[in-house]
Image (cartoon, rainbow, N blue to C red; front, side, top):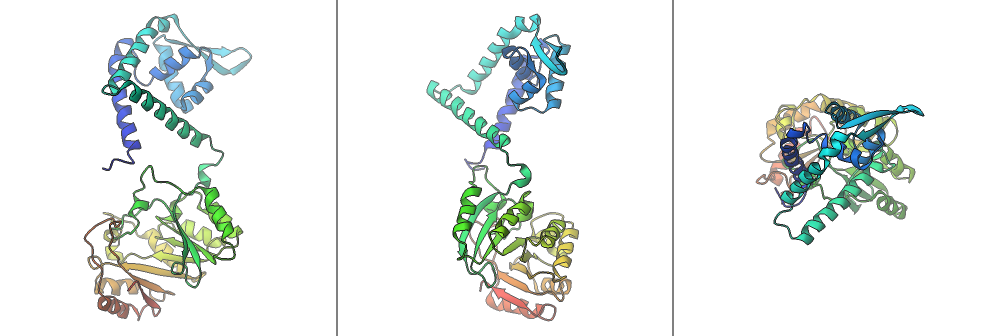
Length: 381
Protein backbone atom coordinates (compact mmCIF):
# COMPACT_ATOMS: atom_id res chain seq x y z
CA UNK A 1 0.00 0.00 0.00
CA UNK A 2 1.24 3.51 -0.80
CA UNK A 3 2.19 6.17 1.69
CA UNK A 4 -0.90 8.28 0.97
CA UNK A 5 -4.59 7.57 1.37
CA UNK A 6 -4.17 5.65 4.65
CA UNK A 7 -6.45 7.73 6.85
CA UNK A 8 -9.11 5.04 7.21
CA UNK A 9 -6.59 2.25 7.80
CA UNK A 10 -4.41 4.21 10.23
CA UNK A 11 -7.39 5.57 12.16
CA UNK A 12 -8.79 2.05 12.46
CA UNK A 13 -5.49 0.66 13.74
CA UNK A 14 -5.09 3.46 16.27
CA UNK A 15 -8.68 3.02 17.45
CA UNK A 16 -8.40 -0.75 17.88
CA UNK A 17 -5.09 -0.52 19.73
CA UNK A 18 -6.53 2.17 22.01
CA UNK A 19 -9.59 0.02 22.61
CA UNK A 20 -7.49 -2.98 23.65
CA UNK A 21 -5.34 -0.86 25.96
CA UNK A 22 -8.28 0.75 27.75
CA UNK A 23 -10.27 -2.48 28.00
CA UNK A 24 -7.29 -4.07 29.75
CA UNK A 25 -6.34 -1.33 32.21
CA UNK A 26 -9.91 -0.27 33.02
CA UNK A 27 -11.12 -3.76 33.84
CA UNK A 28 -10.19 -3.24 37.50
CA UNK A 29 -12.66 -0.34 37.59
CA UNK A 30 -15.42 -2.36 35.88
CA UNK A 31 -15.14 -0.04 32.88
CA UNK A 32 -14.37 -0.55 29.22
CA UNK A 33 -13.14 1.64 26.41
CA UNK A 34 -16.73 2.27 25.33
CA UNK A 35 -17.69 3.99 28.60
CA UNK A 36 -14.49 6.00 29.16
CA UNK A 37 -15.28 9.00 26.89
CA UNK A 38 -18.76 9.31 28.43
CA UNK A 39 -17.39 9.29 31.97
CA UNK A 40 -14.86 12.02 31.19
CA UNK A 41 -17.39 14.12 29.26
CA UNK A 42 -19.88 13.95 32.14
CA UNK A 43 -17.24 14.72 34.79
CA UNK A 44 -16.04 17.75 32.84
CA UNK A 45 -19.61 18.88 32.03
CA UNK A 46 -21.64 18.08 35.15
CA UNK A 47 -25.36 18.31 34.42
CA UNK A 48 -24.97 17.69 30.69
CA UNK A 49 -28.02 16.22 28.99
CA UNK A 50 -28.12 12.97 27.04
CA UNK A 51 -28.64 14.97 23.86
CA UNK A 52 -25.75 17.27 24.72
CA UNK A 53 -23.52 14.25 25.26
CA UNK A 54 -24.49 12.89 21.85
CA UNK A 55 -23.63 16.20 20.19
CA UNK A 56 -20.37 16.65 22.10
CA UNK A 57 -18.97 13.31 21.02
CA UNK A 58 -20.84 13.00 17.71
CA UNK A 59 -22.58 9.82 18.95
CA UNK A 60 -25.92 8.38 17.98
CA UNK A 61 -28.51 8.33 20.76
CA UNK A 62 -28.49 4.55 21.06
CA UNK A 63 -24.75 4.49 21.75
CA UNK A 64 -25.12 7.22 24.38
CA UNK A 65 -27.98 5.43 26.11
CA UNK A 66 -26.09 2.14 26.25
CA UNK A 67 -22.89 3.74 27.56
CA UNK A 68 -24.61 5.86 30.20
CA UNK A 69 -26.72 2.96 31.44
CA UNK A 70 -23.54 0.95 31.98
CA UNK A 71 -21.98 3.82 33.96
CA UNK A 72 -25.12 4.01 36.08
CA UNK A 73 -25.05 0.25 36.71
CA UNK A 74 -21.51 0.36 38.12
CA UNK A 75 -22.27 3.42 40.24
CA UNK A 76 -20.31 6.13 38.45
CA UNK A 77 -23.17 8.24 37.06
CA UNK A 78 -26.64 9.33 38.10
CA UNK A 79 -29.41 10.06 35.62
CA UNK A 80 -31.76 12.80 36.79
CA UNK A 81 -35.07 13.91 35.29
CA UNK A 82 -35.32 17.63 34.64
CA UNK A 83 -38.27 18.87 36.77
CA UNK A 84 -39.29 21.45 34.16
CA UNK A 85 -39.16 19.01 31.25
CA UNK A 86 -39.46 15.33 32.09
CA UNK A 87 -38.27 14.37 28.61
CA UNK A 88 -34.81 15.73 29.43
CA UNK A 89 -32.27 13.63 31.35
CA UNK A 90 -29.28 15.28 33.01
CA UNK A 91 -26.13 13.40 33.95
CA UNK A 92 -23.80 13.78 36.93
CA UNK A 93 -20.88 11.80 38.29
CA UNK A 94 -21.10 10.17 41.71
CA UNK A 95 -18.70 10.33 44.64
CA UNK A 96 -17.46 6.91 43.56
CA UNK A 97 -16.52 8.29 40.15
CA UNK A 98 -14.75 11.27 41.69
CA UNK A 99 -12.61 8.90 43.74
CA UNK A 100 -11.16 7.24 40.63
CA UNK A 101 -11.07 10.12 38.17
CA UNK A 102 -7.45 10.99 38.96
CA UNK A 103 -6.41 7.43 38.08
CA UNK A 104 -8.51 7.63 34.90
CA UNK A 105 -6.69 10.76 33.77
CA UNK A 106 -3.36 9.09 34.55
CA UNK A 107 -4.33 6.04 32.48
CA UNK A 108 -5.24 8.32 29.58
CA UNK A 109 -1.95 10.19 29.90
CA UNK A 110 0.02 6.92 29.84
CA UNK A 111 -1.60 5.94 26.54
CA UNK A 112 -0.77 9.33 25.07
CA UNK A 113 2.84 8.82 26.14
CA UNK A 114 2.79 5.41 24.44
CA UNK A 115 1.54 6.58 21.06
CA UNK A 116 3.77 9.68 20.99
CA UNK A 117 6.98 8.05 22.19
CA UNK A 118 9.94 8.64 19.87
CA UNK A 119 8.31 11.95 18.94
CA UNK A 120 9.96 15.18 19.94
CA UNK A 121 7.82 17.49 22.05
CA UNK A 122 7.13 19.77 19.10
CA UNK A 123 6.22 16.75 16.92
CA UNK A 124 3.70 15.53 19.50
CA UNK A 125 2.21 19.01 19.71
CA UNK A 126 2.00 19.21 15.91
CA UNK A 127 0.39 15.76 15.76
CA UNK A 128 -2.26 16.85 18.27
CA UNK A 129 -2.85 20.12 16.42
CA UNK A 130 -3.22 18.45 13.01
CA UNK A 131 -5.52 15.80 14.46
CA UNK A 132 -7.72 18.53 15.94
CA UNK A 133 -7.90 20.27 12.57
CA UNK A 134 -8.80 17.02 10.81
CA UNK A 135 -11.56 16.38 13.37
CA UNK A 136 -12.89 19.91 12.92
CA UNK A 137 -13.02 19.40 9.16
CA UNK A 138 -14.82 16.08 9.62
CA UNK A 139 -17.39 17.69 11.92
CA UNK A 140 -17.85 20.52 9.43
CA UNK A 141 -18.74 17.92 6.82
CA UNK A 142 -21.43 16.47 9.09
CA UNK A 143 -22.79 19.93 9.81
CA UNK A 144 -23.13 20.96 6.18
CA UNK A 145 -26.63 21.90 5.16
CA UNK A 146 -26.21 19.91 1.98
CA UNK A 147 -27.71 16.49 2.55
CA UNK A 148 -26.09 13.26 1.42
CA UNK A 149 -28.83 12.87 -1.17
CA UNK A 150 -27.50 15.98 -2.91
CA UNK A 151 -23.87 14.92 -3.11
CA UNK A 152 -22.04 14.17 -6.34
CA UNK A 153 -18.28 13.70 -6.36
CA UNK A 154 -16.59 15.12 -9.48
CA UNK A 155 -12.90 14.23 -9.53
CA UNK A 156 -11.89 15.27 -13.03
CA UNK A 157 -12.89 17.40 -15.98
CA UNK A 158 -11.98 17.46 -19.64
CA UNK A 159 -12.84 21.02 -20.49
CA UNK A 160 -13.35 20.45 -24.20
CA UNK A 161 -13.70 17.35 -26.35
CA UNK A 162 -14.86 16.66 -29.90
CA UNK A 163 -14.95 12.89 -29.34
CA UNK A 164 -17.07 12.11 -26.28
CA UNK A 165 -20.46 13.48 -27.38
CA UNK A 166 -21.26 12.58 -31.02
CA UNK A 167 -21.67 15.69 -33.12
CA UNK A 168 -21.11 18.17 -30.30
CA UNK A 169 -18.37 20.24 -28.71
CA UNK A 170 -18.59 19.03 -25.15
CA UNK A 171 -16.99 18.93 -21.75
CA UNK A 172 -16.67 15.66 -19.82
CA UNK A 173 -17.08 15.43 -16.05
CA UNK A 174 -15.70 12.37 -14.24
CA UNK A 175 -17.42 10.99 -11.16
CA UNK A 176 -15.59 8.82 -8.65
CA UNK A 177 -16.29 5.23 -7.66
CA UNK A 178 -17.34 2.16 -9.63
CA UNK A 179 -18.93 -1.19 -8.81
CA UNK A 180 -16.91 -2.99 -11.50
CA UNK A 181 -13.19 -3.76 -11.65
CA UNK A 182 -12.67 -4.08 -15.39
CA UNK A 183 -9.01 -5.08 -15.81
CA UNK A 184 -8.65 -2.86 -18.91
CA UNK A 185 -10.12 0.26 -17.27
CA UNK A 186 -8.11 3.40 -18.00
CA UNK A 187 -9.43 5.24 -14.95
CA UNK A 188 -8.14 3.13 -12.07
CA UNK A 189 -7.75 6.28 -9.97
CA UNK A 190 -11.51 6.82 -10.24
CA UNK A 191 -12.26 3.19 -9.33
CA UNK A 192 -9.90 2.94 -6.34
CA UNK A 193 -10.40 6.44 -4.96
CA UNK A 194 -7.62 7.60 -2.66
CA UNK A 195 -8.90 9.28 0.49
CA UNK A 196 -6.89 12.39 -0.32
CA UNK A 197 -7.99 12.66 -3.95
CA UNK A 198 -9.30 16.17 -4.52
CA UNK A 199 -12.84 16.81 -5.72
CA UNK A 200 -13.70 19.75 -7.92
CA UNK A 201 -15.75 22.16 -5.78
CA UNK A 202 -19.35 22.47 -6.94
CA UNK A 203 -19.15 26.27 -7.09
CA UNK A 204 -16.04 26.13 -9.27
CA UNK A 205 -17.61 23.54 -11.56
CA UNK A 206 -20.85 25.42 -12.19
CA UNK A 207 -18.98 28.68 -12.60
CA UNK A 208 -17.05 27.01 -15.42
CA UNK A 209 -20.24 25.66 -17.02
CA UNK A 210 -21.88 29.07 -16.88
CA UNK A 211 -18.87 30.77 -18.46
CA UNK A 212 -18.82 28.21 -21.29
CA UNK A 213 -22.46 28.71 -22.27
CA UNK A 214 -22.50 29.49 -25.96
CA UNK A 215 -19.22 27.64 -26.53
CA UNK A 216 -19.98 24.15 -25.27
CA UNK A 217 -22.82 22.25 -26.93
CA UNK A 218 -23.19 19.43 -24.44
CA UNK A 219 -21.95 17.87 -21.20
CA UNK A 220 -20.81 14.26 -20.81
CA UNK A 221 -21.08 12.61 -17.41
CA UNK A 222 -18.62 9.75 -17.13
CA UNK A 223 -16.71 7.92 -14.43
CA UNK A 224 -16.36 5.76 -12.58
CA UNK A 225 -20.04 4.88 -12.66
CA UNK A 226 -22.13 8.08 -12.47
CA UNK A 227 -25.30 6.32 -11.30
CA UNK A 228 -23.57 5.41 -8.03
CA UNK A 229 -23.76 9.10 -7.08
CA UNK A 230 -26.71 9.66 -4.70
CA UNK A 231 -27.29 13.20 -5.94
CA UNK A 232 -27.00 12.53 -9.67
CA UNK A 233 -30.62 13.51 -10.42
CA UNK A 234 -30.38 16.99 -8.91
CA UNK A 235 -26.91 17.42 -10.42
CA UNK A 236 -28.16 16.66 -13.94
CA UNK A 237 -31.17 18.90 -13.42
CA UNK A 238 -28.89 21.85 -12.62
CA UNK A 239 -26.85 21.17 -15.76
CA UNK A 240 -30.03 20.99 -17.85
CA UNK A 241 -31.19 24.30 -16.35
CA UNK A 242 -28.09 25.86 -17.92
CA UNK A 243 -29.36 24.70 -21.31
CA UNK A 244 -26.91 21.86 -21.90
CA UNK A 245 -27.83 18.53 -23.50
CA UNK A 246 -26.49 15.68 -21.34
CA UNK A 247 -24.77 12.50 -22.45
CA UNK A 248 -24.48 9.80 -19.79
CA UNK A 249 -21.82 7.08 -19.78
CA UNK A 250 -22.91 4.07 -17.72
CA UNK A 251 -22.15 0.40 -17.22
CA UNK A 252 -25.86 -0.40 -17.06
CA UNK A 253 -25.88 -1.68 -13.48
CA UNK A 254 -28.75 0.54 -12.39
CA UNK A 255 -31.62 0.20 -14.88
CA UNK A 256 -34.29 1.70 -12.62
CA UNK A 257 -32.21 4.81 -12.03
CA UNK A 258 -31.41 5.02 -15.74
CA UNK A 259 -35.09 4.78 -16.66
CA UNK A 260 -35.98 7.42 -14.09
CA UNK A 261 -33.48 9.87 -15.56
CA UNK A 262 -34.66 9.18 -19.11
CA UNK A 263 -38.32 9.55 -18.09
CA UNK A 264 -37.47 12.84 -16.40
CA UNK A 265 -35.83 14.25 -19.52
CA UNK A 266 -32.51 14.63 -17.72
CA UNK A 267 -30.49 12.57 -20.21
CA UNK A 268 -30.34 13.16 -23.96
CA UNK A 269 -27.86 10.46 -25.04
CA UNK A 270 -26.66 7.27 -23.35
CA UNK A 271 -23.44 5.40 -24.01
CA UNK A 272 -23.61 2.04 -22.25
CA UNK A 273 -20.47 -0.01 -21.90
CA UNK A 274 -21.38 -3.53 -22.97
CA UNK A 275 -18.34 -5.41 -21.78
CA UNK A 276 -18.68 -8.77 -23.53
CA UNK A 277 -21.06 -11.60 -24.30
CA UNK A 278 -23.13 -12.92 -21.41
CA UNK A 279 -20.93 -15.97 -20.90
CA UNK A 280 -17.78 -13.93 -20.16
CA UNK A 281 -19.29 -10.85 -18.57
CA UNK A 282 -18.21 -11.43 -14.97
CA UNK A 283 -14.66 -12.20 -16.04
CA UNK A 284 -14.52 -9.10 -18.20
CA UNK A 285 -15.70 -6.79 -15.41
CA UNK A 286 -13.21 -8.27 -12.96
CA UNK A 287 -15.70 -10.03 -10.68
CA UNK A 288 -15.97 -13.67 -9.64
CA UNK A 289 -19.77 -13.63 -10.00
CA UNK A 290 -22.27 -11.23 -11.52
CA UNK A 291 -26.05 -11.31 -11.81
CA UNK A 292 -26.68 -10.10 -15.35
CA UNK A 293 -30.29 -9.18 -14.65
CA UNK A 294 -29.59 -5.46 -14.26
CA UNK A 295 -27.40 -5.35 -17.36
CA UNK A 296 -30.04 -7.10 -19.45
CA UNK A 297 -32.72 -4.68 -18.22
CA UNK A 298 -30.60 -1.69 -19.24
CA UNK A 299 -29.95 -3.22 -22.67
CA UNK A 300 -33.68 -3.80 -23.18
CA UNK A 301 -34.49 -0.28 -21.97
CA UNK A 302 -32.14 1.39 -24.43
CA UNK A 303 -33.25 -0.83 -27.30
CA UNK A 304 -36.74 0.61 -26.90
CA UNK A 305 -35.11 3.48 -28.83
CA UNK A 306 -36.66 6.24 -26.74
CA UNK A 307 -33.51 8.39 -26.90
CA UNK A 308 -30.27 8.22 -28.90
CA UNK A 309 -27.84 5.66 -27.51
CA UNK A 310 -24.87 3.51 -28.33
CA UNK A 311 -23.35 0.37 -26.88
CA UNK A 312 -19.58 0.39 -26.49
CA UNK A 313 -17.22 -2.56 -26.15
CA UNK A 314 -13.54 -2.08 -25.37
CA UNK A 315 -11.81 -4.94 -27.19
CA UNK A 316 -8.93 -6.69 -25.42
CA UNK A 317 -7.01 -9.58 -26.97
CA UNK A 318 -7.08 -11.63 -23.75
CA UNK A 319 -10.83 -11.14 -23.21
CA UNK A 320 -12.53 -11.16 -26.63
CA UNK A 321 -12.70 -13.81 -29.34
CA UNK A 322 -14.65 -14.21 -32.57
CA UNK A 323 -17.08 -16.51 -30.78
CA UNK A 324 -17.60 -13.87 -28.07
CA UNK A 325 -18.45 -11.35 -30.78
CA UNK A 326 -20.99 -13.66 -32.37
CA UNK A 327 -22.70 -14.18 -29.02
CA UNK A 328 -22.63 -10.44 -28.33
CA UNK A 329 -24.24 -9.74 -31.71
CA UNK A 330 -26.99 -12.28 -31.08
CA UNK A 331 -27.69 -10.64 -27.71
CA UNK A 332 -28.17 -7.10 -29.05
CA UNK A 333 -29.52 -7.89 -32.50
CA UNK A 334 -31.18 -4.79 -33.95
CA UNK A 335 -29.39 -2.32 -31.67
CA UNK A 336 -29.13 1.25 -32.93
CA UNK A 337 -25.33 1.38 -32.73
CA UNK A 338 -22.33 -0.56 -31.41
CA UNK A 339 -18.86 0.93 -31.06
CA UNK A 340 -15.82 -1.35 -30.82
CA UNK A 341 -13.11 0.58 -29.02
CA UNK A 342 -9.49 -0.48 -29.28
CA UNK A 343 -7.85 -1.06 -25.92
CA UNK A 344 -5.01 1.34 -25.10
CA UNK A 345 -2.47 0.25 -22.51
CA UNK A 346 -1.11 2.70 -19.93
CA UNK A 347 0.20 2.82 -16.38
CA UNK A 348 -3.31 3.79 -15.23
CA UNK A 349 -4.88 0.50 -16.35
CA UNK A 350 -6.10 -1.68 -13.49
CA UNK A 351 -4.37 -4.84 -14.76
CA UNK A 352 -1.03 -4.54 -16.47
CA UNK A 353 0.02 -6.84 -19.31
CA UNK A 354 -3.12 -6.75 -21.46
CA UNK A 355 -2.88 -6.28 -25.21
CA UNK A 356 -4.81 -4.49 -27.95
CA UNK A 357 -6.06 -6.32 -31.01
CA UNK A 358 -4.59 -5.45 -34.39
CA UNK A 359 -6.46 -3.34 -36.91
CA UNK A 360 -7.12 -6.48 -38.96
CA UNK A 361 -8.55 -8.30 -35.93
CA UNK A 362 -10.78 -5.34 -35.10
CA UNK A 363 -12.07 -5.22 -38.67
CA UNK A 364 -12.77 -8.96 -38.54
CA UNK A 365 -14.77 -8.50 -35.32
CA UNK A 366 -16.76 -5.72 -36.97
CA UNK A 367 -17.50 -7.99 -39.91
CA UNK A 368 -18.86 -10.64 -37.55
CA UNK A 369 -21.16 -8.13 -35.84
CA UNK A 370 -22.54 -6.35 -38.91
CA UNK A 371 -25.34 -8.88 -39.63
CA UNK A 372 -26.76 -8.26 -36.14
CA UNK A 373 -25.87 -4.56 -35.69
CA UNK A 374 -25.49 -2.87 -39.11
CA UNK A 375 -24.17 0.32 -37.50
CA UNK A 376 -21.05 -1.16 -35.92
CA UNK A 377 -18.23 1.35 -35.74
CA UNK A 378 -14.52 0.99 -34.97
CA UNK A 379 -12.99 3.61 -32.72
CA UNK A 380 -9.44 4.34 -31.62
CA UNK A 381 -7.55 2.66 -34.48
